[in-house]
Image (cartoon, rainbow, N blue to C red; front, side):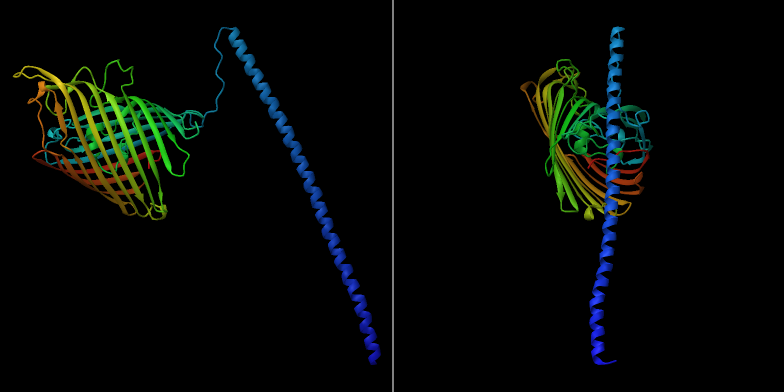
Length: 471
């Protein structure tokens, strides 16, 4: 083929191929546009159908609501015409309204005392305080049975009953029985009934959740193992970047050292204020600091005063307590499963004012005013060094206190130059979150001129549902 023909053929192919390719591209684009248009029409039709169904459902709901309101109004009118009070509107209750969560805590121990536990006391304080001192040998300790459930969308209820064995006697009593409003909003919660006061840190913790077998000396001496109150509590959590809680209680203390049994206080002889601030320190640590104040009227009928003996009876006046508490927790990256550490400390002071009467078989009766001031503190640390195993150390101490009396009692009121203290160490093992076995040793110097070596072997078993413990 000659050169001129080859050139002509190439020019012809170059002019034909672009047109063919362009025609193919145009067909493909038209097909894509058609499919998009069909999809849009299909989705628009489905959206219109859904909107129509929504409109019909809303209309049906409005009609049903109107019918229900009309029927309720008709029923109330009928009851009123029959001389009956209108029935309350039906409320939506939780599924467990008649099937509350039930928890049983088994808390037993073996106890060894170097000294006779019947003679154990605290020099200058209430003879045996509220210390959980039971008989030597095996003891049931304090076991708890708790019922809890949501009453409805506004109220929550809980009741805890304790079976306790101590000094050879077994008792059954109510620890807590209260209703609470967890759904008021705006950070506000109300609680009414009998409950552990929220003052301090340790007071509201049940015995099975303690980090040691017994409570610290200031707690047990000034407040008992747990100061329970019957009354009303309001607490508010502020909407702030850090944790801020404020609370107030108006109540009647249960088992307070000098409770008011008169009617002059209109059933509210005591009130408490508390405040707390807390937050995180990085990803692994957190803290909480608290302060509280309690004032209570004393019994006007007379009760034995501290450990001065039965010849001393106290009446009237006020008891005031205040304190500070601190808690620090550490866990790697906030995960306490493998390792964690908790540091806990509290300080509290008690002031008692009233009238003291001294009357024995030898000296004539004498009555005068007295002002007593005593304080105490403790610090403890608990370290979980591997999963399931923890070790703890605690030191607690009470002051010897001061007593100011009027002239009529000068020389009749004993004084003490001794500050009770105690060292405690413990090791515990938990097979799971529902069981714990603990071994503890106390070097107890709470009585002047007496050293008491104490050893406790304790088991704590949790059966059934159980709520989370406090921070």
